[in-house]
Length: 95
Image (cartoon, rainbow, N blue to C red):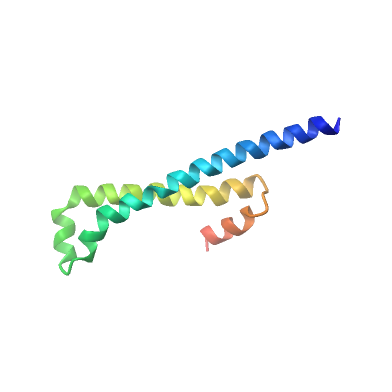
Protein backbone atom coordinates (compact mmCIF):
# COMPACT_ATOMS: atom_id res chain seq x y z
CA UNK A 1 0.00 0.00 0.00
CA UNK A 2 2.83 2.42 0.82
CA UNK A 3 4.42 1.79 -2.57
CA UNK A 4 1.31 2.98 -4.39
CA UNK A 5 1.16 6.21 -2.37
CA UNK A 6 4.85 6.84 -3.02
CA UNK A 7 4.43 6.36 -6.78
CA UNK A 8 1.51 8.80 -6.82
CA UNK A 9 3.59 11.44 -5.03
CA UNK A 10 6.52 10.89 -7.39
CA UNK A 11 4.22 11.31 -10.40
CA UNK A 12 2.90 14.60 -8.96
CA UNK A 13 6.43 15.87 -8.23
CA UNK A 14 7.60 14.87 -11.70
CA UNK A 15 4.72 16.79 -13.29
CA UNK A 16 5.44 19.82 -11.11
CA UNK A 17 9.13 19.66 -12.04
CA UNK A 18 8.35 19.55 -15.74
CA UNK A 19 5.94 22.48 -15.59
CA UNK A 20 8.31 24.59 -13.49
CA UNK A 21 11.18 23.71 -15.83
CA UNK A 22 9.14 24.78 -18.84
CA UNK A 23 8.25 28.06 -17.13
CA UNK A 24 11.92 28.57 -16.28
CA UNK A 25 12.91 28.11 -19.93
CA UNK A 26 10.14 30.48 -21.04
CA UNK A 27 11.49 32.95 -18.48
CA UNK A 28 14.55 33.39 -20.68
CA UNK A 29 12.34 35.40 -23.06
CA UNK A 30 13.68 38.45 -21.26
CA UNK A 31 17.00 38.12 -23.08
CA UNK A 32 15.57 39.11 -26.49
CA UNK A 33 13.65 41.88 -24.74
CA UNK A 34 16.89 43.44 -23.50
CA UNK A 35 18.51 43.01 -26.91
CA UNK A 36 15.56 44.69 -28.65
CA UNK A 37 14.85 47.52 -26.22
CA UNK A 38 18.33 48.16 -24.77
CA UNK A 39 19.87 50.20 -27.60
CA UNK A 40 16.70 52.25 -28.03
CA UNK A 41 16.35 53.12 -24.35
CA UNK A 42 20.03 53.78 -23.71
CA UNK A 43 20.32 56.50 -26.36
CA UNK A 44 20.29 60.13 -25.16
CA UNK A 45 17.18 60.96 -27.25
CA UNK A 46 15.29 57.82 -26.22
CA UNK A 47 11.81 59.38 -26.55
CA UNK A 48 12.42 60.07 -30.24
CA UNK A 49 13.97 56.61 -30.67
CA UNK A 50 10.93 54.91 -29.11
CA UNK A 51 8.62 56.46 -31.68
CA UNK A 52 11.07 55.75 -34.50
CA UNK A 53 11.42 52.07 -33.52
CA UNK A 54 7.83 51.42 -32.48
CA UNK A 55 7.58 47.81 -33.72
CA UNK A 56 10.90 46.88 -32.13
CA UNK A 57 9.73 48.29 -28.80
CA UNK A 58 6.39 46.47 -29.00
CA UNK A 59 8.14 43.17 -29.62
CA UNK A 60 10.55 43.84 -26.74
CA UNK A 61 7.67 44.65 -24.40
CA UNK A 62 5.87 41.46 -25.48
CA UNK A 63 8.95 39.39 -24.62
CA UNK A 64 9.21 41.21 -21.30
CA UNK A 65 5.57 40.39 -20.45
CA UNK A 66 6.08 36.74 -21.37
CA UNK A 67 9.09 36.63 -19.06
CA UNK A 68 7.19 38.32 -16.23
CA UNK A 69 4.25 35.91 -16.40
CA UNK A 70 6.56 32.90 -16.62
CA UNK A 71 8.61 33.99 -13.60
CA UNK A 72 5.49 34.73 -11.56
CA UNK A 73 4.05 31.40 -12.67
CA UNK A 74 6.99 29.52 -11.18
CA UNK A 75 6.31 30.85 -7.70
CA UNK A 76 2.56 30.46 -8.02
CA UNK A 77 2.80 26.87 -9.29
CA UNK A 78 5.18 25.84 -6.54
CA UNK A 79 2.99 27.50 -3.91
CA UNK A 80 -0.14 25.76 -5.22
CA UNK A 81 1.59 22.40 -5.00
CA UNK A 82 3.07 23.17 -1.55
CA UNK A 83 6.71 22.75 -2.41
CA UNK A 84 9.19 24.03 0.15
CA UNK A 85 10.71 26.72 -2.04
CA UNK A 86 7.35 27.80 -3.44
CA UNK A 87 6.40 29.99 -0.48
CA UNK A 88 9.54 32.08 -0.77
CA UNK A 89 9.24 32.51 -4.54
CA UNK A 90 5.56 33.40 -4.23
CA UNK A 91 6.26 36.12 -1.67
CA UNK A 92 9.31 37.39 -3.56
CA UNK A 93 7.35 37.64 -6.84
CA UNK A 94 4.63 39.83 -5.38
CA UNK A 95 6.73 41.85 -2.94
